[in-house]
Image 1 (cartoon, protein in one colour):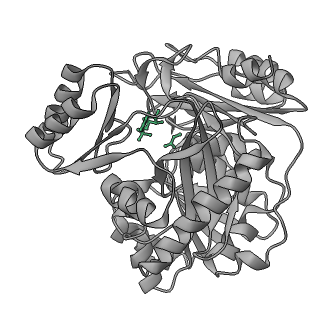
Image 2 (cartoon, rainbow, N blue to C red):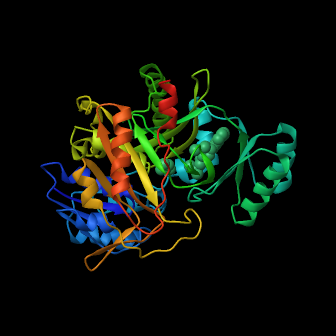
Length: 423
Ligand code: AMP
Ligand code: GLY
């Protein structure tokens, strides 16, 4: 089987790596890929932008690929799946309309309300004055969100009224025509990446991301600084409830709107101190870096699961098989990220890290001749799988310490919530 993976992050390196482990996958193309996918045996990069959906469809046609797996939300929200379906190419990822579950927060909130899914109370506004009046009435803390893709910069958790007003003004000034203002939920976050064929839903093991740049969850929001899986906050009881009260009703509501959603439904949940889950947001794709912690634990060949979704026969698939143990992924970033940072720094030590029994998923890297250099903010993620959480933490940091590039920064407290949970 020939597959094409779209995207250039650590998530896509992990997807290509996992797909190529299947005996049925002979060849993988990555568009545009990164230094890691370039070095992966059986994988070839094709330099096209993830927004160039016509170009990508051409590549899929020319190479007669059997399956396209879409990483980034932007490519889905531009309609890559609609285009590939018209060409008769099997694609894993929702259509443009389905991708609205991520690209429009107001649309997603209406859908979830219709489905009876627990969410934060809130309203959508098209002008600043009305939004501010609502904020004054509700008080703080309060959350202000852009109603569109904002690359992780569209959510402001405001502690004071002036801060919330500024967020409203900033988002309208940035060109968003709608914003959502909603109640601030308290608790612990967990990411449930579920796969669906539009009818049946199968959750992957639960993971927890670390979005802030600094230890102790301080500083600016990032794309994600590390993840671990399984996350003990998601007990079997909670997972069952999430399936029954959140995921399944959402897929049914999508179907009721005529949306045949085949892809990842990623629920970002807040679990209250009383153990009640509410949806903070849905994403229409795999999470990054959650994927780098979740997929290495999956024993069922990934192509099998994805094809079952694409061919709408997920219900016939036996239960997913998982490795025992815990996976922890720590992301190393360039100095200055998520602000300004330099590129082109030589990366060394990946082989030494891998010799210690970890897997390195590259993200912002590029090959310049035979030199591997930094090419982005999140440079790479190191994943360790060990029998238990404590050993995985030790293993992952031993791996991270082997790798060097000028300005390397990483969080030293990945998994701190799981550690405190274990007492
Ligand atoms: P993003 O992934 O950029 O959309 O950011 C979403 C993040 O904002 C979540 O991971 C939460 O940390 C935070 N967030 C979003 N909505 C709420 C809410 N209603 N209450 C508290 N935090 C929220
Ligand atoms: N890890 C957060 C995300 O993928 O959106």
